[in-house]
Image 1 (cartoon, rainbow, N blue to C red):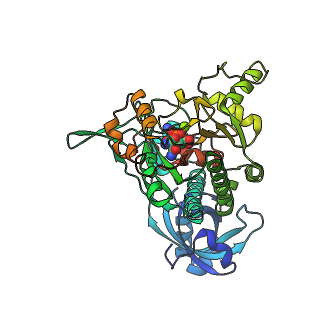
Image 2: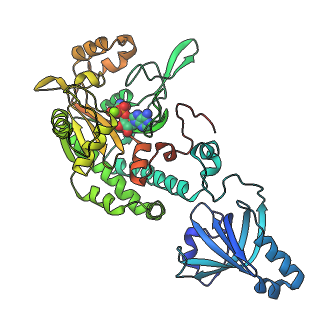
Image 3: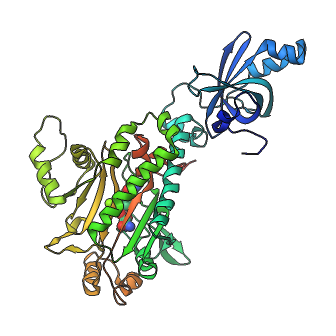
Length: 448
Ligand code: 4AD
Ligand code: MG
């Protein structure tokens, strides 16, 4: 914010003083001699009150009336510079309001499409570039920002180096069915699904590394948890055991929740998020359960009155109703560990006591938010890894660099990836992932 203007978030420091605020008119009301303006400037919302007699007293009858009428008839989303005195007001939600002295229009606004009435989701999505100005969307973006900021802080504090993995790649990190392909000077290239494979090279060079950037998946599924472009934080750590990796993930997610409570408390309030629940997730240990125990538990409860998931056999993958049920059953974020090798990616290390299970974990968020982290211990043996690559119908030549890491000082190592928008949705308590990123990309959505 220019030093000439006071931001709305800071008005509490200016009680009794004259300030100029650069803002937009989010809404207005009033009648007769009084006009109320709901202002927003990106930092917060705030009410300004203009009283006609004050204007006439200050500017004379004609000029005063003209000024007041301008204010009274400002259109929604007009950009203004507004001067006034900050007053404490216990009745207003914000606690303060502005007693208007003068106003200048910076940019007009005619027929703003998003009015205070209810709009359908498609309409709002078509106007995403404007929808972002609304109170709720602003709060979600502030929470997203708090998570990003806390991520850098957490990894820096824990000795990790930010290591940027490429977005254009010649291989598939996760699976070949959800790859976006593009032409790279006559050779097929793919948009990254996860920086993991490159991060493993980073971990062998720098010990502990993380990346944080957009990844892409040609997900044909139309759910409230899937985007085709989303942001992933991948972390990779040399000489770390699977158990220690879970400890690290738990500490990270707790730090993120605390980071949002500390940095975006107003946003949580706007969204009416139950912060006692968030605090509980920080205070209580996360649950850890094996995949096979989770299947047993699901089978045991499938006939219960309040369950509505399909029967699963050992070996089947979970659908979202199963994930939701499991994490709700425990009431805290829940790690499901050691899934069947057959339903997980090629690079995971088999469990020492059971070749059919791999040393991996999905972290499932309670309240129906689904999987927020996927991670595993990595296969370190050259021959076994090569065999897995072949069994998965992948071309070993595309994974030369990755196999090399197993030839020169291969060590136990683990890593995980957190989906930023899944976490935003979970902490913000919003229902659909499309609101967790400024411009969502989904099956039928590439605009705006
Ligand atoms: O479980 P995933 O596929 O794991 C990986 O990509 C690993 N290579 C990560 C690693 O070990 N470094 O994806 C990680 C997370 C998921 O837990 C989920 O939170 C999110 O990414 N995610 C999605 N978020 C939004 N839309 C999608 N289509 C997503 N697919 C995965
Ligand atoms: Mg996963």
